[in-house]
Structures are given as C-alpha cells and as structure tokens.
Image 1 (cartoon, rainbow, N blue to C red):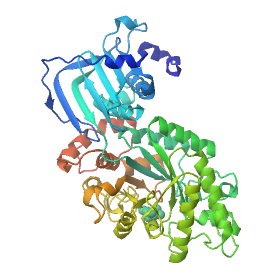
Image 2 (tube, helix red, strand yellow; image 1 turned 180 degrees about the vertical axis):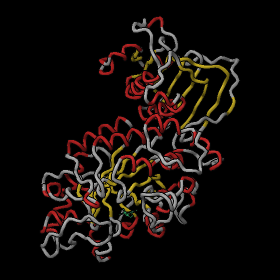
Image 3 (tube, rainbow, N blue to C red; image 1 turned 90 degrees about the horizontal axis):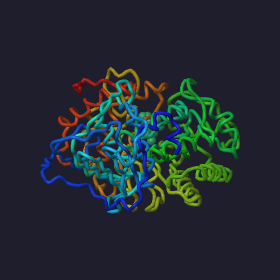
Image 4 (cartoon, rainbow, N blue to C red; image 1 turned 45 degrees about the horizontal axis):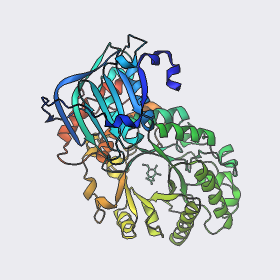
Length: 518
Ligand code: TNX
C-alpha cells in the first residue's frame, strides 16, 4: 500500500475489513443521553446529537475500512498523523485500542454519511467513497486547526461522543475558476481543490478560453496554444495546460470527489481563437491578441463550415480526456453575433457535445435555442432566461452575479475585483433565498449552485484566496445544507471559528468586519 511507504505512517494501523464486519454494529451504551447540538462545521450538517464522554485517538488507534472506502480512510489517516504523535510503531492488531471504522451502508443516500462516535469506536458509514469523504471533512473541522499544518503534534486527541447524519440539498455544488483572463498553474489549481474540498464543493468548472487567452492543448489545432495562450489581461500571466496537465488536475480533483467541468466559451469570447487561426474569421484575417477587459466584441464566423469542423475537433479532444458528464459551451455575451446566428450556432454546438457523449451546460443566454431537457442552464444575469429554460424542461444552475460572483468587490474599499454587479459582502453571499430567487424556478428545477471567480483583476493566489475566502464557505452551505432555521447571526459565529483553519492553511482570506473573528 502506497501510504505505508511513508515512514511515519507505519505508526498507525490500517486494516482492510471484509464486509462480514458490517454485522459488527457499534455497541450502544444505554446510559448515554443524546441531545441535539450545533457544531462548528461548515456546511452545517443535517442532524447532530451529543452525549457525555469522548473518544480518544492515540498510539493504539487503528483505522479499518471496507475496501471501497479506502481513499477516504487514507485521507483521514494521513490527516490524523499531522496532528497526533504516535508513540508506538508496532501495534498488534489483536491489541488495538480505539478504532476508526469505515463501513459501507447501502441505505444511505448519494453523498450522504453517518458518523457515530462512541468511547471505543468512531464509525463512519456511507454508500460509497463520496459520502465517506464528506464525513472525513466534517471530522476534520472538529479537530484543532493545528492539524492543518502539524505545528502542534499531540500525544492524543479527543472527539466528543456525537451522532451525525448528513446529506446534501443539491447534487451540484460548484466553484468556477477563470484561467483565461489570468492563467493559474497546475499546482495553484491543486491548492484551490484542497481548499474547496474542506467545504464539500464537488464541482470545479474551469473557464478555459476567452478573448484574452486559450488555455488547453488541442492537438488538431496547435496554434491555439502556440499563439493563443501567450496573452492574458495586461499580459501578466499567460500559459496553458497540456492534456496531461488537465488529466493530472482531473485525477487530483477526483480523489477529492470534485468533478471538473471544462468550458470553451462560444461563439463570443473567442478573440484568442480568431487571433490563432485566420480561417475562422469571416474576413480570413487573424485578429491581434487582446489584453484588455472588454467583453462582447468577438464572434466565431457562424455561417462558415470550418467553424463546425473546429468545434467538433475541440469538443471531441476535450470529451476524450474529460471523465465528467458535462462540457460547458459558454454562450454568454455574444453581443457581436446576430440573434439568428447565435441560435443557429448554439443548436449546432449542443449537437456536437452530444455526439461526443457528453451533456451540455451553458450560460443563461443559451435558453433561447433548442436546449433539450438534459441541458443545464447556468443563471448569472437574466431571470427570464432561467424561467425560459425551465419551460423547456431544462435544469438551472444558480450563479446570481448579484450575490455570489466572487470577483465582485466586498465593498467600496476592496482593492481588487469588479463592481458592475454591485457589491457582494460576506453577508450578501450567504443571505439570499435559493428556493425563491427566480419566479418560475423552484427547487425541483435547480441542480445546484456555483460561485464563479472571474479573474480580470486576479493575478496571484493570494488575490484569489482573498476574494474566495470567506465568501465561498457560505455558498457551500447554501448548496449543501437545509435552510431550516438559517440565519446570518448564527452563521457568522461559525464562520468566525474558521479563522484558525484559514490561518493554519495559509489562506489569505479577507477579514471582513461583519464577522467577529475569534
Ligand atoms: C460577465 S458572467 C462575464 C464574464 C466576465 C464577468 C466579470 C459571464 C457569463 N460573463 O465574461 O468576466 O462578467 O464579472
């Protein structure tokens, strides 16, 4: 087992248990009296009960797991090692003390989990590794923040005796990173994935192309990266991912139960394409690379056949390396494409994506074409587009720019970010009603929520983290947790407790004065 090659890992037992152990139910102590409690975890779990007493992780603790939950068991085991000094390196499996057990339970819903902590055993149950992974993120937030960076390794650590039952409200809980306006390296994207995982985000939408740059290797159209990747806003940070890089990001994300959704923005937002290939322009003249911040000036030449050869090649190569179900075709702000041409183009682009075995997501403007019921329409601006999508049987993904555009400034004094959608304070990002936001769009029409980070003004990781944190945990909670009893007054206290974790992780969060950071 790979983990055991690391010297310190031999200190804690990892044992694979066979399914016969499923019968080995936790022994309930009839004396224990459980009461409902609130714990400092974001997103807030569905139900938490607590009894007197504690469970101790120390040198005699073992982690045992059903094979299908191995990824999560190893994640927790590695994590515990960061904070607990294990004194003994030779634990006899027959003499183990407390046990952390990962057990398959088919009756638990998709992505849901149960945690039951008794004095002798910490039991994690889920249908598969997804739920178990989210359980681990809950346990992680119950541990001291020093576990994040091993600054204070202890001989043992205690958990309260808790029973937690949890499952998400929405299947799609997303974050979007614009790597086109400024490029972010594989390492930077991995760090972003690490941070998203803590809050049970399960989708990373990567905006891979825009007027200012093309960011993914397409072997059949090599000038897209040879030329089109060189630019960025202000020419500060160009670059691109090879297909191998993309797969590396995708594999890393999948270990964190995050699906990558690649976006190629079409038919507008395409200056980098039009600059790389003269033939894709109606006048056969390549444009210049663009480093400004305007939107809506570029369009593929909709009535040329070569345009459809181009999108078929690009989507085909992307579909081949993408493990998720969806490809995002953009479709926003095509102000220089005539309306008829736009609808004609989007219909064809949807057919291309389907022909490569994937489903379509597009920005809300695509609702005007023949989207079909399988398509997801991403609401960002026009409510009418979202309700039109619902009338056509499609599902809506909520990204209201008025609340959760993470590139929008917190307030007037925020040094980076845009203001076209107003201002989005930490409170604004949390206090909107998901279920009633858009007339004609009810919760059954909504697939989930995604917070985008456009990067016209974002160049460094520190700047990215400053805009994303602390707004993202609130969005994650809207997407995961039930709204019963939700209040900003209660949430801001839990958010304040994330301070130590942000700091231990080196997250350059914005210290909003709406929160009493502890
Ligand atoms: C609008 S949102 C855009 C992006 C910009 C963003 C800046 C959307 C679908 N299009 O092209 O980057 O505003 O906030």
